Length: 295
Image 1 (cartoon, one colour):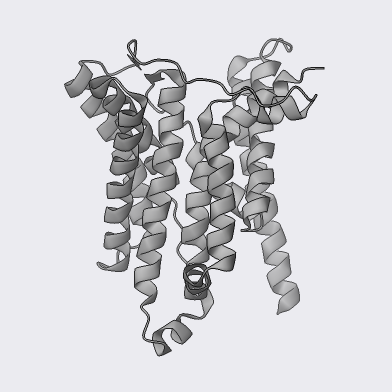
Image 2: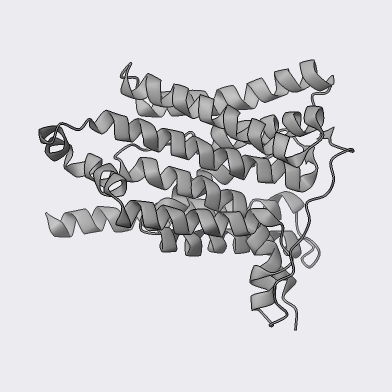
């Protein structure tokens, strides 16, 4: 028995999971990174441009990662060194990514709309199992899905089993202890921003290279969803996976609903965003009540 809905949900969750992993590092360091959307979009555009000019998937991924790394490094510098407001700087990155991708698209490709990559070979699919349900979850996906699971496992190992992870997590509530040891919390927080850029660059490249084209606003709010996923997953790697899959399933359901229900397409496409809003409200209510009880 095949479950194409599950297969589609896994594909949709890949960029969300990558962005969520990156955002988890900054969150655990005590810095809220609301620029995940812009970093994803930057990685997607740069990957498309890199693949267009190099003719290779590897060139596209390298360009996507490098661009997102540079932008996240700039963001970290502005916030940590220049003491900029974290919300204003993050929103600036999101606005910059959206506008700059359109401008560069016109100058590089002569288009403000869709940029196709006709010479780029399709991403190969890996067939691993024929077991029902598990086949839909783990088989017949491109390498991005397996890279996302590997990145999740590595993030759990780094955060929970290495001195770097312990010190990074100490930045949030025990930075004085780090300073007493001669360590600089700012350095660990800057590293977290770079890791966030690395993950978003890979996640963004999965959007454009997986589609074989760059579409304006191709990230479509997935960076914002990743921010919600971090808190819905209780700021833990395994919880991140479950939350990302839930949102992937919600978007997959909205896609399938277009062919079933005879209602407005715009309303159906808004289902994932409505779901995100409800989850955000639920998290804020739960957090507020939890803080009141602890007080």
